[in-house]
Every structure is written in C-alpha cells, then in structure tokens.
Amino acid sequence: MRALLVLLLLAAPAWALDPGATVGADRAADLGDLVLPGTLEAVKRGMRVEVAEGRPVHWRRAYTEATEKYASQVRLGPAGELLNYTAGLPFPNVGAEDERAALKVMWNHAFGPWISDDAQSWSIEWQLGNVKPGKPMEVVSQERNDIEHSKWISFIGRTEVPPIPAVTDNADRARGAELFGPTLPVFLTMLRSGPMLTLRYLDLKEDDSWYWVSWNRKSLRLPPQIRYDGTGGVVMDLNSMWGFNAPVGSYTFKLLGERKMLGVLHARHYPAEWCPEGGDFAPCDAWEERAVYVVEATAEKPYDIYGKRVVALDKQAWVVLASDLYDKKGKLWKTLVNHWSYRPDKTGRQEWPYLLSGFVIDFEESQANRWRLPGTRPLAEAVAINTGLGRELFTVDAMPKAFHDAGESAPVVPGRQ
Image (cartoon, rainbow, N blue to C red; front, side):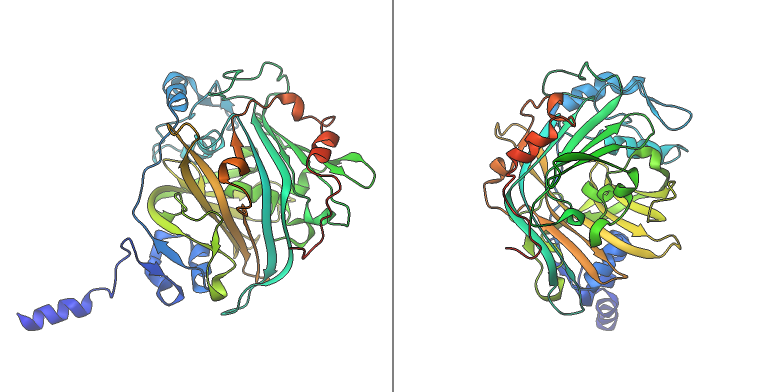
C-alpha cells in the first residue's frame, strides 16, 4: 500500500492551477490550452499569470431587458449582415452546431454588454520597446500625459441614455463613432496632432476615418488601409484596439471551439503593475478561469498585414481576453492580452468593465507595446460612462474644437516622461 501511495504521489503533478498559484516561465507548459499559444509564448518570455478565484460578471438591467425584448427578431442576411437589430445582445443562444455560429459570436461582441451608449476617457500611458530574454524592456518611445481626451458614442443599440434605442439622424446607418485623442506615432512631432475620428457602419463596409493635423490645421481623410497596419513603427494596429476593433465585413470567421481558458476580468491594480524583470513588457494581475469562444478571423482585405487573427472571447462578458495575430504564411507573429476590471459604477447598483491595461508583443521583431491608464486621477475621473454625449461632437467640423479641448499647446516628444 505504501509503495502504491508513493507511486501515485510521484505521478501527480507538482502543483495545480489553483487560486493563489503563480505561473512563470519555468511552469509555462502547465498552462496547456488554458491560454492561447501567443499568451503561452509571452509567459515563456517572462510574463507571469497569477491564478485567482473566478467571479461572474453581471449585465446591466436595461441591457438584459433589451435582449429579452428584441433578440428574437434578429437575423443574419445572406452576406452576413445584421438584420432587424434594435438593442441588447443580438444572439443570446449561439450553438456550436450552427454553421454561422462564429459570425453570430462576432456580432455579439460588436454589440455586447461592454458597449456603452457613450464614454469618455482622459490620460494614457504607453511605451514601445525592445524585448530581450531575461532583461527589462528597453524603452524606445513613450507617452504619458493627462490631457488626452477620447470619446465614443453608439448610434444604435442604446439602452441607458436618450435617445433610446437609437439616434434619429442616422441616414448613413452608422453603428457608432469614436474620437481617439492620443497622437498617432506616425504623426509624432514637436506639435501634437489628433484626434482621429472614425465612423463604423452597420453595413459590411469599411470605416470612414479622419485625422486632425496640427501643422496645417486641417482634417485629413485617411485611407482604410491605415487601420490594418502597424503604423509608424508601433506594434499594435488600430483594428486590434479592445482586442478586436475591425469591421465585421473585413473577415470571414470560423468557430474553433468553446473551452475553459484563463483571462483577466477583475484586474486588481490601478494603475496596472508591470511584471518583474524580463516580463515587464506586460502587466501582472489576477487571471481567472473563464468560458470562452475561440474564433478564427481570416483576413479578406488585400492590404491587411495579417493572414488571420485568433480571438478568445468571454462568453459572459463578450470582451476579448486575448488575441493571436498570424502572418500571411500562417506563422504566429504577435499576441495581445487585455486586462479588464469589472467595478461598480457611481450608483453602486451595476458594474461596468474598464480596460485598465494591456500589451502587444511582436515575436518576430522582439518588440512590445505596453499601455495602461496611468492612475494620475481616480478611475471615476479618468473614465466617464453615459454622460449624454451628442452626435454633433462626432463630426469633421467638430474636430478642431476637440483638438483644442485636449490641450493644443502640449508637445508630444518620443521618450518624454
């Protein structure tokens, strides 16, 4: 009996992925398929996964009611377009046997409970640097300031702030818009520029984008290709914001499966804390076991620099936990990880997801782009949700004022603190 007990102990793993465990490079293989291959590679390069107890996320009451009221009428058109959508989750019951399951999953992400009627954020911190095994990230360029002002608005699917469920003046069938405040690295000079205005449509077509250029005080119409490229030497493309931020019509989708994976939905640290030593290209925080959809998105546009994306989407929150980016030959090129944090709003009666930090690492070039909300002000003052922004703020004519409001005189210089 004693011999049998010894054999069982020897055969058992040295440890389990129980809450409280920390997984580093020496134990990376034990993560198995609980993470995407790119995340596993990031752990091998120094990132740490701190395993925590899983916690549910809760939908807002108005969003739940909209889903119950409108979901039964939603359909997919012949080309994959979304038909008869009003508000809430388009497809609350996605079955793996459905041949269009992946497309429904991606439409659920596009209109998921993480999307607000409007939102604003101030301040950003990012660093771009070289990553070498066992050594801290060598920062090449960075920005950390407290004036960058970004805004988002939903034109349809609104549940909280009038007009509900949609704005009335929307003949072009725009889903929503964003004014992204930080200067794009390709335009970094002694004079800051921005914001960038993007209109996203319900139809399966490309976005329309404009960028305010300070030196000639004009709004520059941008070609759609700019969203599909790592512009100006950065690691992350615009379509990778939030984990996946591309028009649905730009990809064909395949459901690779439903499974348990680790992800960050209840990040504890604000501001985020970078992992120690050679893992400082990434934030360290609490990872929990989640039920996810894994979707493969194959590029349709010839100017897309990637061949495909593999996205891990949380089945309850409908946010992207991580994404692997592959080159045209099918080789893993980059990986992205998001650190979300569900926290009570100012009423204390419902939760909102805050994207506190994240990173992208380029395995080919050994470069990384890490970013976070820098914590220079309380989170409630750094991010504002559903304040009643109007569509008039999201026009080309409004861009000069948006630029001025963000602090026209503030210089943006690579490497400044």
